[in-house]
Length: 381
Image (tube, rainbow, N blue to C red; front, top):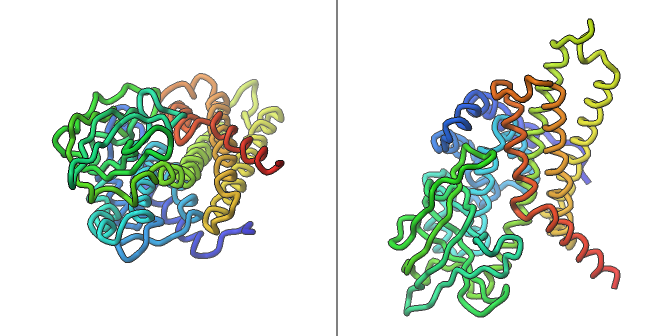
């Protein structure tokens, strides 16, 4: 069990914190307002090893642990949760190629993915298959050495602004056993994108539908064998849930820090806000909840690194707890700012908007409870 960071982990975290403070935080509000996708800044992050954090080093990855990744994504999110979250999605999609791709596939795509010269999106959700991912209907029909692909994906982060789509598609019958994973060039004829969705938050990354209409792509672009795509998707989501939890904690920490600074300056009834015991207690509770969530995240990340049998359950637990805590801490920080918290220039309302979706994506928090409950019931038999 790890209760303190070693020197290397502190260095990694501090490097990401410094990058967030210098390259991300000063621009985060403008990126949100302009719906700007900061590809150039993400490539700068990749030059520091953050484009392929847990990708093997023979293809240019940093070969770090999931624990290291949690530290990095939390640190980056102190500058902008949306930007950190997209880098995490890119890492998740790239990891699927690294973990399940052939040596030829790994060397074809991963060197440029690790530098973010190529950027990847993860494509699972469909208009009629969100939480019930095994019900997806996008179908790839074999035609010699190619697949003919038809269907639609929904809520795809980065779509239209990325190069590769790591997509779960149906190559067989109904249910999870009929799903395979394809790596799709975004410029493939027959691949098109919907309009950029108008969202509550996460405006610094585009979110679009992806449509496939008789898109033809090589069978050589399939990861592993037919029928294991659902397994690949779920394995990716274990890590993705840790990453998005880390992004929630980073955003919440930034909101807490803003609230602490504001309370030292703002006066009411002749006293600074931080002199009121009720508000001191609120601040203390926010810090306690955040530290509890961070400790939980570290435990789940360590479990995934060592391939613990309970890792999937712990990742689901940490995601449910951490994303709920992250949103609540940010929301309380807004309240502590009073009316000023509602103004965009203070940066709190953006964090609240960004963190709200973390309770939905990578599996809703209701589905996290379902995963945990099933594991508990199976263990009791």
